[in-house]
Image 1: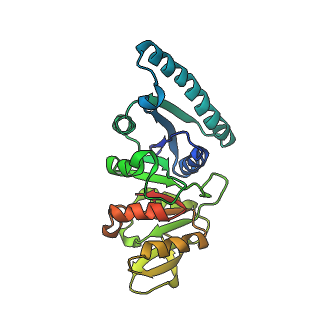
Image 2 (image 1 turned 30 degrees about the vertical axis):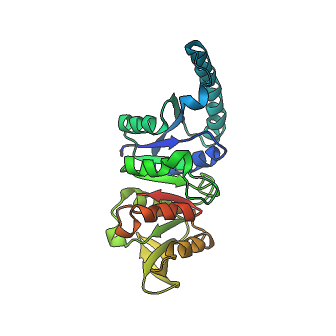
Image 3 (image 1 turned 90 degrees about the horizontal axis):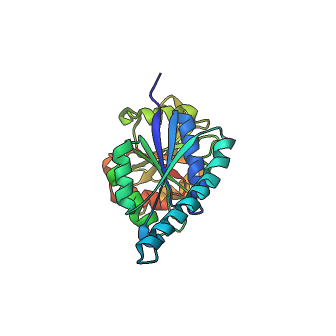
Length: 260
């Protein structure tokens, strides 16, 4: 029997947490994963007094409140989809605590959300960028308007990738769950040229080819909602996709993105 994948959910307990949970649970059911939920709070956001005794009291009180809030978020969706989600919360520098937890637990996939506003900033002081640099495994960035949930069919888009180069067992497992034809978004010499291929990873595929211009990511992002894709898979090791372009894809594409 294949090993269960470890899926770590990072959350700031803001309004998009239920959407992040839905994405994570949907993913766990498709890839046979165990879920863990981590929330980190900065002490400076919590402790408002110089008194050590008062600070301890405030931390203890926040611990009770946080535990209750996490349970109120996790329990209903866990029960609805019969999926256990273990949780942990800690206090300290957010990036330091996340990095320590990643090193300690060695997750296979990290799930987190992004800002609803279309700005250059990412949640939690560039946490997405930090996670992509700290974690070499897969990262699922959940979109606030994504339909990637346990109740919806999976519709996959593959970004700028050839099947012969796609040797990722995670993607192959997900493709097996896809009910609609796959959508392949490629950057090439022909502009807005749509062709139907016979197969891609044993699935019927519709291919979109875009001219490599300065606004190619914007052009692709406008096509994705029309194609009914709810998960876009991006290989971070592909030369075009590295660093700056990954950030632009995450910023502009309004579906959940799996960076492999």
